[in-house]
Length: 398
Image (cartoon, rainbow, N blue to C red; front, side, top):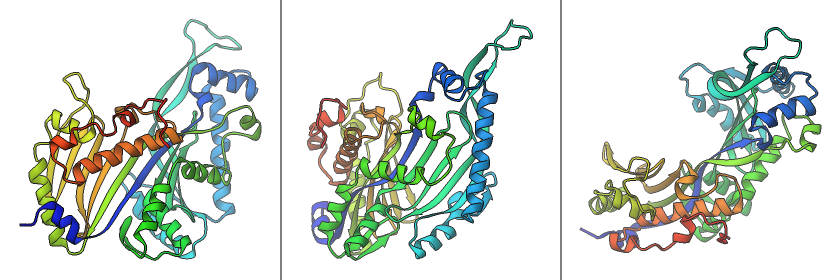
């Protein structure tokens, strides 16, 4: 049986390392504390009594503006049912927009979901007074969320979720492979897609350079380009007063894709990886994959799972709230993915900026290499990028 090095050398036709899915949250820093909320309502919006009823008026106007926006631009509005696959509902609309190649919102979906919102109530012991003192707190509530499914010439399909309750958060989903496809098309480089990745490319070097170029700047550009196009709960006066959104990483995926010339060669390589790393579920071994020291005091669960569906297995390693996954994609390509669900697992900040973005990418690429390149454990244990994983703000991540 050929070893993994021989299989990589003789049967891999394309390699691609790229940022994959990015899940972000946009928040307004000046609405994250009780004092800031009261200042906004009392001094910025001139409400005599800062209360959740005042936020209710702002939210109602925001919802009305969204429906007016949908009517003006002839955008379908759909009420999602409980448990319904939202992506399946939006897919025909996104495919039609892709054929047209025009930037536009294709669908607005409404779904009732749980979210943390600001709520106020009269302070106890006041009796009936003209201007009661209000107490504030964050509470969980089932409220309507608006899903804006859109097609973007730079990113392809994406969605944007928000609600009309303070502090008016936004969630954003993007795909780095789809961004790379748009850039290759603009550069005139032909490629063959493999789901949300690549099966072949006329110029692999250009493809990899484009994937390496993706950074936080492109994400921020997307956000502000679309933020200006549709309604907002904030007025221009609010923006001038500093009530501006900032972006934070909620989930960050880095993937390596190896396309094999024939499926049996890929399965042989994958089976050799499972034999070499089957005991990664022990904490000390998971620590080697992620270059992190794990002790009894480290929170979280550390384990390995090997799943087999049909003839294609899946290998999953877990570290705190992050995970490393390896599987066969469409029976043709080996996909290795590091999914970072909490940046603080690796001592990295959540804010979307160049320093945090490049540090997260370094974590993902390092973990993918440890598992995907088939190194021995002894070699993988060497801290090749320890300063990058530390999240030290003095490190230059460029």
